[in-house]
Image 1: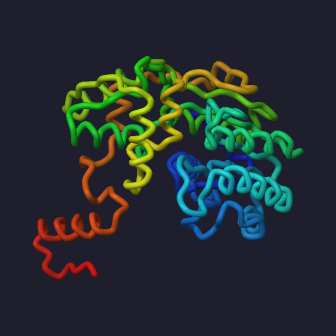
Image 2: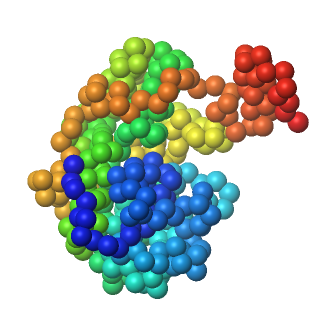
Length: 325
């Protein structure tokens, strides 16, 4: 791992700082060097005045804010496009010298996916900002607190089978969160100036192999078979409608359908010393596992099912005082 330059006195602001990647960056840098910006800390990514105030005294912004599905007013346009424009303007006001943006490997224009297109628009806003920048077009990132290992491990504990996306399976190249943070920290310390680079993992494998490896680690071998894209489109929509955190979102389905191994748009390669090298193996998977658990009613968005799950859990604890109105 790269040592953080102790000579730099400026703080680093992290948008999306309570999310998966942002949280790991903040933990690596430490509280004394970071300003965490997120809705959970009371700062909306498109609130210009509050953003500028939060960035005061910061020399670098790590822009990790993003969503993989739209809910209410949290749309791709608001979070990715207008949010990034606000981050750039707030950074100018606050005297920030550089923005390090976390984008997606396959982000591109005019592809029919609002997620991919909005991420591309955000990249273009950063590139044309006049500020120093690094854009990291990352593939699938995994680690403690992620969606990938969390969902696959819980799925393996819930049912003994899984379907890959499309009849012709594509490859993925997962990036361990520790190595992703290495690259981000290097960019905050002045490397990769005015560059857009691809970040992929140390091993390329089929999604089915990744599923089997996770299932083997949790001791629940799974039958993995292909299913057509039409099935997954419907399944992803149902997951978004019914689950608080979807098993798979429509944007994620699109990612898996086309593979997550090569970048689209302008993207160079990382220097050799920054390239992720760790394989997607049992020790890495084990380190990323969440607490044991299955998918159940508590994962559903519908209030009636959540109430039933709460009552059932309370009954299992013998807690007669719990009431749900």
